Length: 345
Image 1 (cartoon, helix red, strand yellow):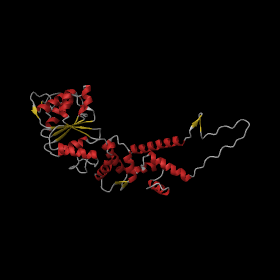
Image 2 (cartoon, one colour):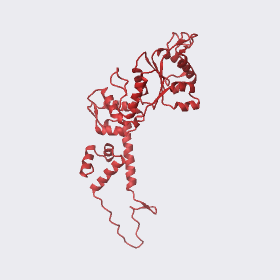
Image 3 (cartoon, helix red, strand yellow):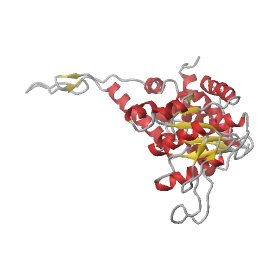
């Protein structure tokens, strides 16, 4: 969800209805300083949205506070700073992230990871605009706009007692849920073009590779898609990026789809069972008699091929690129066969 240059890096990319709705909310939120809570899975672009909101009225700094990376007794010092000699190793005074965000925006990423004691201190900062550095006897002021993000259900965390109810209501003035990539796959072509533009305009993804990319659910969301594009570019000098250039997770996805298809096809072609014996098996003739086995029904090869193509397209719900891979043929060969058997409109 970022653009090619550093100056316009934090811009939402996509044309789906869900992305357009997020863009509309960014425009509205950029004109005010109300707290905002961004909800969504890891990798859906919550920081990009936060920076986009800040960029609509970029007064003051944008400070990212990654709550999941701050652990142990130094968390309070990271947030609120400390005075010289406040603890062992504090040789100099240090400004905390809260003070650094003064007159700007503080983005609390994964705020659900913040311990309860620091949640209480953060609440006071939001209410009173003041805080006290570690080891200091005097308070300082910091006035900033807060945008928080989490992949947790904070309402459930409140019920469990792991997140303060009063802080939750303070943050949840305006909330925005970011959809996972699997729910807005129509954004994928634009995102791929966007990521490719950052490494050079001469790259492009083949139609076969794109169809396989579109058939994948992307559990790592946009971050995983960006890594996929970088992988393809790294192993292929271009200009075309092919199916063979896809990373192992998508290759495994293809193998799994092929295995599922073969199992489905094998089950479909197995004859019905009768008294524990499949219809395809020959029963033994009575003792002392000689019986000829019935002649098998011979199906022309062309008909078998036609049926295999139909089964593959039904299984992949019309995805011709994946169907071609399951059949072990190229996409152009599949198109030729579809025309040969008059299976195209």
